[in-house]
Length: 170
Image (tube, rainbow, N blue to C red; front, side, top):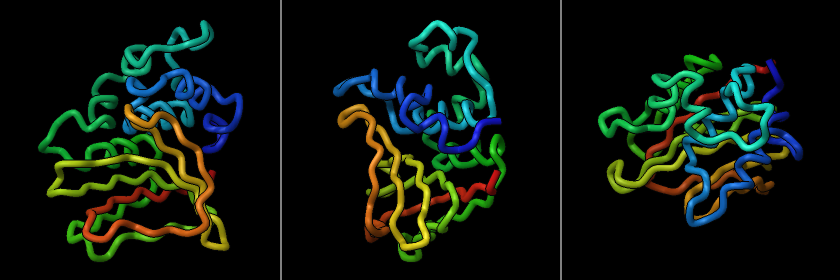
């Protein structure tokens, strides 16, 4: 098992692969999180040593898990977080009302899902909280591509539903 940061740090397989997908066909948010989770537990596609790995190769590591982690089923809105919990463990918290968003946990890696517009628009991202309230935000979208940013404070969007999986320290 790798640590949580290594696949996303400069030179890390997931970061480098995510950067190779450019908008408007960049890596979807759930696919980034799924690649990261598989890398953390050491489950790499067979062709990982050959350089750029297709999303199909990552999916072939465990097709059922990949489908759940990528929210392919509209009736399973939180399937990404549940899939990540099955693979990585951790504690899951949901805010279905949009009024009591879970918090960042200093020193912990977290996988988030956010839904707005009555589940019509969602996003999955990864965070690492710091003691001073700042945090590292790792995300991707087809339109905007891969982003790895430091943010000064957590400001959840009012009215959005949030789910968060807080991972145990390795």
